[in-house]
Length: 328
Image (tube, rainbow, N blue to C red; front, side):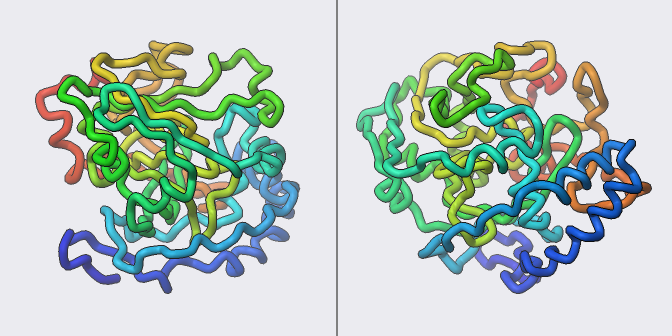
């Protein structure tokens, strides 16, 4: 490990990120585990991992800045095959294996992202122009999902603040809304009624401007896979995973707080803020602990969930004086 001199955060060296090849031998072991534990939820996950079609490799993402930034975790990253094969992306289906099986034909070129609303310089970026707004860094962030599972992922991208500054927010801008692709010809999950489409998320402007809030173009050194939100997505590491919108096509700065997809679908279960908070239970389950994907074994101990997913020192001041049970 080493420390970033400017930011003071502990950083893992690139050599400490476990290579994908190390995990290839896990498939046979998981196949046997799935047969032995088919009746348990862990066995169900193992069966998914063992039987899923191989994920095709992606091109390397060029131009990654070597001066790594962001508040890194020193934990071992999740296996690439798990992070790309066990996903929530309801536009492609509600089963965790659906995105990896159904998203491979997603067309990501050409791609544009419009940025407008309460800004002085509204713009529409093509993907190449968008990527050039910042120096692409690798940041190893925890990902905590509301269902109780977590991962550690090396994302590639830059702080969203670069984009927001480029369009010059007006004095009335208070919130940032993210609109994602909704193309029924490519996304079979749009035929379901689980959500209103397109998927919409939002952050407060100060949350969006925080250095940890990241616009992502890749992971594990490669171009972002379709099932993980290609070609551009959000990563907000102190919030539950559903706040990190995938396949973004529009960003709008607003004066008033907008509704979000999950907040509209189930307001008792999914609040606007959705900060990781082990002291506020989901109405149907506890959030006090989590299962790290890849830590296999019938008796693997759950991890204690950390406030703000372990990023309290960096982001806690954003919520000073707020009742985090009311603003959940």
